[in-house]
Length: 198
Image (cartoon, rainbow, N blue to C red; front, side):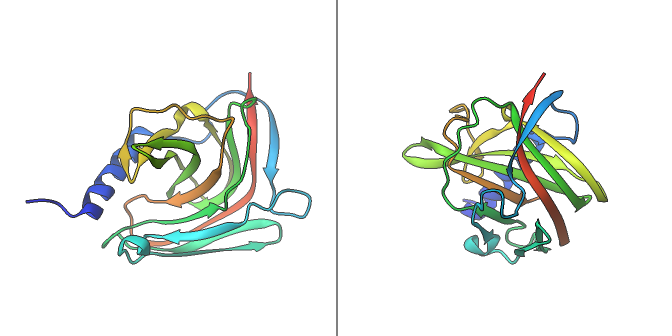
């Protein structure tokens, strides 16, 4: 029996979550960090937008607001037909070739989240994405360091062998929650930085 396309997608995303998981403070020893955005007037506005699993028939909901110079991402995940919510930037141009990874300052709810990067890279003529997961504490501020080497290429949830992430040609950033759990979520993002390593 042929499985529905969305079922294959979810199974493949689960595999990516296992292989790409990054725990807080287990990445590189940090030398320096440069803020990309702190959601205030002094830094770039990346023009975030919401994309939920409703695009594939799912039932999750999500939204964000900018409150007191923080991005607050909230919603409810429903694994019956999907199970993810995300926010993504509009097209941008970032050359982070002098850096070792992405650093996030945030407070969340103990659930697992995913950072997303997109470049011009394609597979069979279609744009691919790069994902890395990270765990959070419940209601506690923390710094997450995600080395660029942890990002895994994927297309519609299917893990690919390549190409390698081109950090000199970043066109989109994103934040996902896809941890195979039902229920409410909340993440407060204070700023996003790029860091160099010792």
